[in-house]
Image (cartoon, rainbow, N blue to C red; front, side, top):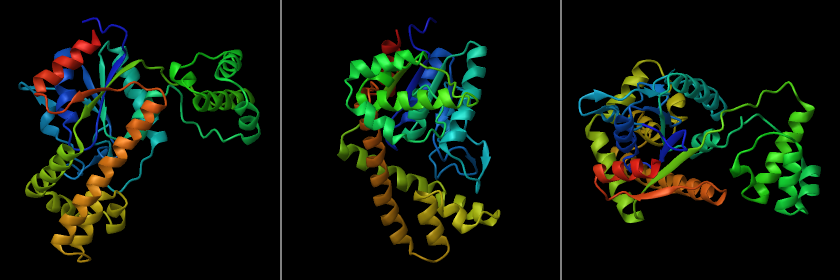
Length: 306
């Protein structure tokens, strides 16, 4: 199938919105492969607590290949710089094989890092330069950026703030030619799954109880038994923090369930805030009503791709 002008589809949304099943169903129709953008699903043995939903990677009896899930041992630490590096390797491998990628995740920071089109090198803030540029119009900034002679993402020139940061990075590169900031410029169709706040809250609570029934506490106990320290698990936050505190006797089971429920709602709210910020920064997110059937949602995404 000719994938029109897009190099990739990105499926994003808050926790418990059904991103994985939409991404895998779209991928199955396109013979595509899924790349996860989730800061905690990279860990082996952290399955129920991170909502991996690995059963969703079988569609109509056929496995959908996936990447960047289960690549590290629980207890290790990971960050967005490493994610960019790992993503780039996977993306280039998929492209070489002429396969289409579907990025799926809830970590806004990881998704944005991939869609921005440049490596998040630790380019420091240049205050004098920012002061000088802040008085220029967007047109003048774009002109200045073009003088620096590097191809740029349209999202870099959507507003002054982004253009100033892009110039700051370019100027830094002129002085530090040894840094390799090359990163694939990806033109992705970005699709978000949208629920009303009430629906989202109901889904989160329902899913939390379902995961507790599926053995989420036992999963955490197993990680502790395998030598991951309580501090190491608490570092991952949310499920791992509250359940570890319950297992080690710091809080009661009721407190754990209650506290966790509240924390996941707050987390979902932060995810939505991040996506709104991406929209303000010039990323176009096509929101799809989460209440639609999986077939309808899949059809809608494939329609947009054409």
